[in-house]
Length: 345
Ligand code: SF4
Ligand code: MG
Figure (cartoon, rainbow, N blue to C red):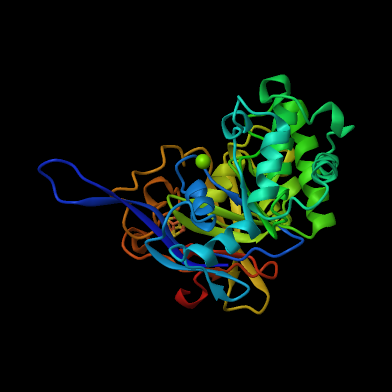
């Protein structure tokens, strides 16, 4: 569980005041066993930094990380090692994360030994790990070097290595984006099967919101270091509330796969009307105007960080940071956007 998780990286430039890159700001999220949570956003939105913070690869600037209610202290060696075993990371590039001069056997044996799980029958433990990631028969793979395997097989070895720690959670940072399109689904399906069989919590980091709908139970959207929308994946992809989420969906490679066609030139966001019980009104948002680039995180925009790109920005958006508001169309669906501020209307 991350509460108010914040990471600022200091940058020093000669002759100027010390500044920092506000990479992650006030991020709240909860991972649960048996569930996949997707963290979606453009590159540079801070999503990898969130994973690295959760894995303890960066020290946090602020906020809290808790496991079963206990705060994780990155600086306390023994307690931290116990935590790190339970929360394993899978990286984007399986070739870079495996050592090219070592075999599959070496990688998996090392993981089992580090985590004290080598046991009496090492060979059997190795075979079990390889079978779990569907590299069968295991004896065909165990003495191979990374370059003798395909990209998908390498990522399966990286997953097997993570499983060697017998974790409760996997933090998967773009685990299929470097893989050939034709084998992505196979790796995601494997992760889903492992989630069910081993009752794992999975954080699935991606820039591809379409895959989040397919793979994740819950989806959180990140923009410029902050969470902007969250809810169950079906709701987020079918009825996005935040103008940025809508932009992401509009620019997804396969929009038909995601949403029914919108009225030409516009989309509607449904906003709860506090004056009427169960009532809603629609805000018409012009499409294609929300272009532009994500902002610099050294001087992020004031107020809502999306306001310079937002086609429906209001005056207050430039100065006031929107908190999470209930969207009201599905349990747990929230958006950090002033459009949903029922109290203001
Ligand atoms: Fe747009 Fe304002 Fe909502 Fe930000 S808070 S997304 S600027 S309407
Ligand atoms: Mg990244």
